Amino acid sequence: MTYDSREQSTYSGAPYELYKFDSGTMGWRLTTADAVKTFGNEDYTPEAITRSATQQSKETQGGTVQVTLPRDHPITAMFVSYIPPAPLWLTIYRAHEGEPEAETRVIFIGRVTLDTKGEGSVLTCSPEQEYLKRMIPTMNYQRPCNHMLYDSGCKVQKLLYSATGQLTAFTADSVSAAAFALLPDGYFTHGYIERGQDRRFVIDHTGDTLTLMVGLSGLELGDEVLAYAGCDRSYDTCGSKFSNTANFYGFEWIPTKNPFGPGGIK
Image (cartoon, rainbow, N blue to C red; front, side, top):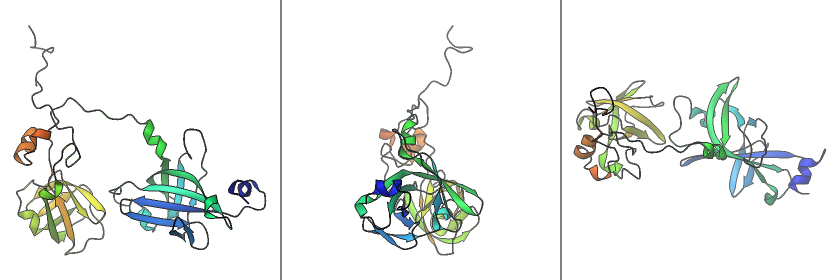
C-alpha cells in the first residue's frame, strides 16, 4: 500500500513519526516507534515524544507545532538557562509500519523555541516560512558601526583577538582564568566566551574575571574556555583595537546638533 492509502484507511494505518533535531554540530534522532528506525542512513531511537496537530496550507508546510519531550532530555536542557548558541531546527517525518522508505513523508520543517509547562518541556516550533514574513532590518544612519563584530562585513578574524584560559574560579555568572589578566581590563567586554557548543556574552572584564550575561552550567575547575575580544562599535575602538576602520560602517561625523532645532539655522 502507499502512504496516502494507509493514512486514509480506517484500519490499515500503523503510523510512527521521526524527529530530526539539529543545532550547529549537534543532532538528535528520535522516533515515536517502539523500536529503532533507520531512515536516510540514520538511526532514530525511541523516545516519549508527542506533538500537537499540524495544519496544511499552500503557504506553509505545517503551522506552529508544540512538541513535548521529557524535562530531563538533553534537547530541553539546552534552553534551561540560555538560548542555544546555534538555532535548533526540527524536521518531522511520518511513515507507516511495513512501508518502504520512499513512502516516508515530511510533515513539518521549522525552528524551535521553548515553553515549559506540566510534566514535560514543550518545544514551540514555527515553520521556516514564518521567518520570510518578517521585515528585513536595514542599516541605520548612526554613529555606531552597523556591522556585528567578526561578521562578514566587519571582517575581523576573531581568532587573532582571542585567549584560551583554564578556569581557576567561577560563580553563577562569572568565570576566572589567569589568561584573562594578561590583557587590559575591558578587553573582553562586549565580547563572548565559548565552551564547546555553549556561548555567553561578556558584560564586564576586570583582571582575571569575566562577568557573563548568563552563567554557564556544569563548570569544573580546570575547564578550558575560549574568550573573544569585545567591541563597543565606535570608530575609535575600531581603529585603535582592531585596525579595521576601512570596514567601519557607522557615520562618525553625524552632526550632533539638529540644524532645524532651537538655535539652529537663523
